Amino acid sequence: MAAESYPQDLKYYKEHDWVRLEGDEAVFGITWFAQDALGEIVYADLPDVGDTVTAGAPYGELESVKAVSDVFAPLSGEITDVNAVLEDEPQLVNEDCYGEGWILRVRLSDQAELESLMDAEAYQKFLAEA
Amino acid sequence: MLRGPLGAEDGVPVSLVKVLPDASASGGAQMALDDGLLQTVDQVMARRYAWAPPALSLGKFQAVELKPGLPFDVVRRPSGGRAVLHGEGFEWSFAVAFPPRALGAGRRAGADVALPYELVAGAFAGALRDLGVTLDDARGTPYQRSALCFASVLRHDLMSRGEKLVAVAQARREGRVLVHGSVLERRPPDELVAAVETLLGEPWEGDGLEATGVVVDADRLWRGVLLRLEAGLRLLKEAS
Image (cartoon, rainbow over all chains, first blue to last red; front, side, top):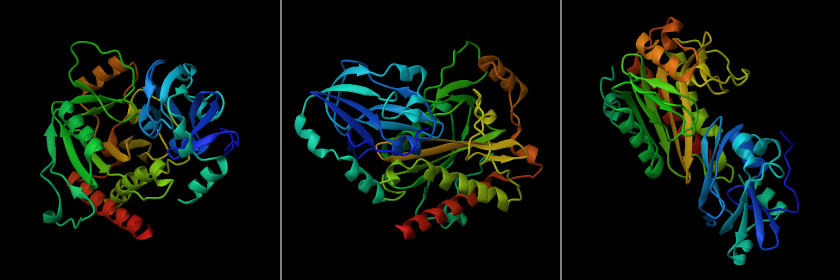
């Protein structure tokens, strides 16, 4: 597993998701903190391309050796791509959570939702408030 | 085997934990009840239950090709993990459900997968030790995979003399947490073991509590678990 990090070029959501903004689309994944809390991930139950996701609502589930947990959408939109590699290699979420362990790509439907996201510094402060 | 509900009237001074009546029912009914707790629980609740008729519970995403003529029901759990064989006379089950923020309101608490395990598995560990069971230190044990839960080993698992005594699984949904599990009292009847081995293609492992050489009364164990769970929640409450 990689060392704890929260890249500066990403945005973060309170349910421990990261967002990489690319034009009118965004890539979602879970943060280092989230994958570390879950432990070794053994299965990813993910939606299909064309489905819609809603900010704050669960869009899939990750099963780790410890638990089955919801994964929450940080922003709303239509799914344009799903990381199909996770079907066979779900542990990529642990090994490279900001890279090969990405989960969804979404065409955003409400740019105003971006204001609810945190930058890396704010997210680390958020974590420190525990 | 389960003699009746334990609660305040039975000398268990619980107030943070609502103890539900014991229930003996089919696997489908038991998992519907646990799933209902996961969806709606609004205070910490605990229950103990028996499976009649016997059933094999599968993890939520566990892939198993079923065959006709099995001598037990097959049900799917809302939690993850591997297959567990349940039935009266060799095993009993439990569930503890936590509403949102019952485990602390901090930023990390909502994502803390370890804490619910530690509370519940810790309560079982303490209660088992009180009854004279010596537990192995499983913390350094590497994860052992098997299609059978009692043949798999995780950091929080409760082991004695290399035998896994209690299987624990967890599901989380919209802030609620369900920790449920199974106490293996003794090796199941040969007919059930043989059918499980054929279905999953893995050898049965597990003689449960009987292998420890200590006679553990289920009622005393559950009472001890409830008391320790209550104490653990009180500590959490005081710390927050």
